[in-house]
Image 1 (cartoon, rainbow, N blue to C red):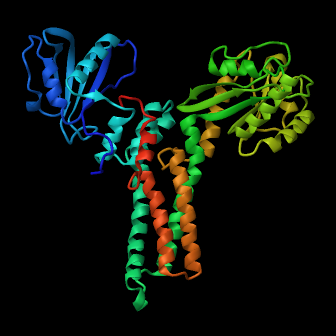
Image 2 (image 1 turned 90 degrees about the horizontal axis):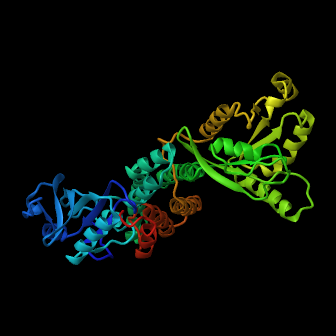
Image 3 (image 1 turned 180 degrees about the vertical axis):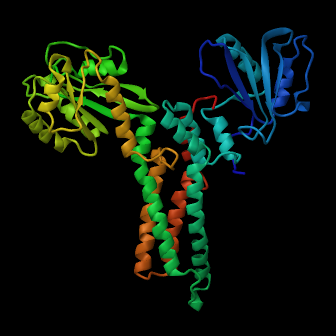
Length: 466
């Protein structure tokens, strides 16, 4: 069990969101949980119940009372140590969703000896008591904030230990070799080698490949967690704002026949087939003397560079195939790692077969009418397909946490120094120093190595009741 730097007193907090609802859940955890709840919980006839004699994971109907005053009828769920989320004695009180009732019960529990929980303190106690490692604890926050099927799957996989088990295995393999090298240092005067250098080199090379794959997965993990940025770009009056409104199914952007209406970036999110997309409507790309509009155009090019997918939308009867080729060539320097998707708009105004023949040189082009909502579903499915083609399966280990990927990069650097040392035949003490560095950074991911400041920073991002 890990040593806690927080008080081991009893804490209480509302575990459901603030606001009026059908029910609210109040969570109490700590050594005095049952003693406190025994004072305020009773049957409907106010007959006392000794909760310590009730079995764990059982639910009891009764009332919360303050002396002779009944506050609410509740369901009280018991979780006895160590079989609870925090590993401590825990009780969850399901009361009616009135904010007044919830606060009255919480204040009553505080009056009898508990204190208000800090942000993330329940999950911090779960970590400190060995119920979760640090990466699993962080995945709890990701699970709560998940807003798409893919982000939910990744968070669930990490919370169940998929990522941390891989890190622990890599770390253990390094520890096994490090212990042999440390043993060599104890017999340095006898000039013996317990750790085979060839085996160590093969191990480090293998671990570096695995870590690099994890680092590379962060690009995908980041878009799964935060949404795939899709920039909608094109000339003024190409229908970009109309397309944004149609995709979001609401009037998010101003639609006007006046060129240059959109002068800043407009952004909103939508989930398509379980994948979160962040659509970004940008200022029309054209030469302009208007200072404000020119700033908007510059932001457009910035958004293209930052996006995973750039939709170039154009008026199908206002651009020729030759002109489009020049436009694509001009956009290419700005499209780094993103995918450029050409979309011909306003097909309702021209014969579709004629349009397709005109742009036959662009086989992956899509043809839509944003105004008439023609082929919008086809566009959405194409976006999902683009995401699927560039991502790994979400059942694989994917890194979504910036702290984790930074630790992996430091680990990789330390392992690179180990390989350099092996190639240069350095002595065991230098190898041991670099291996210790790699072990240190791997340990910070799962919490084998942590500091009070690090933990406080991580758990401060949680909600109070978690």
